[in-house]
Image 1 (cartoon, one colour):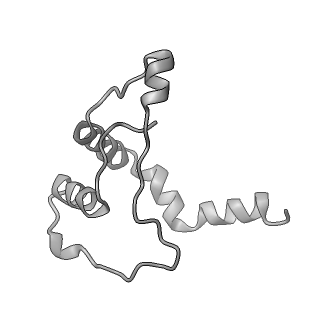
Image 2: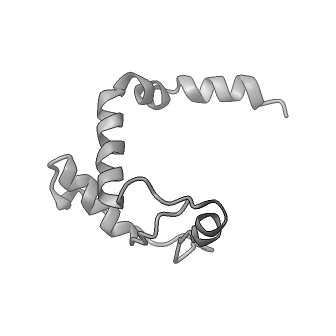
Amino acid sequence: MGGDAEKENIQIVRIILSALDKPESLIRFVTDRPGHDFRYAMDFSKIAGEIGWKPEHEFEEGMEKTIQWYLGNKPWWERILSGTYQQYYERMYGNR
């Protein structure tokens, strides 16, 4: 669901770097790929109107919780970076 918190990618990158106490000098700008979407936004007004759903957290709080989850679950994402996940994916879906 959307959360009524439209942000530019650079804003999100800066939030993440700040939460990790990392310098903005780590940011590297790249050329946009062909067909790149210039805007991503989700409108949750329909689900809010129909069933009363609303975001549980403000964007910044949700980002902080997400960052803390990743920091606390390092073995989960280390497997993805190790290539094990890619091998699993190829084994399960490579012949389709």
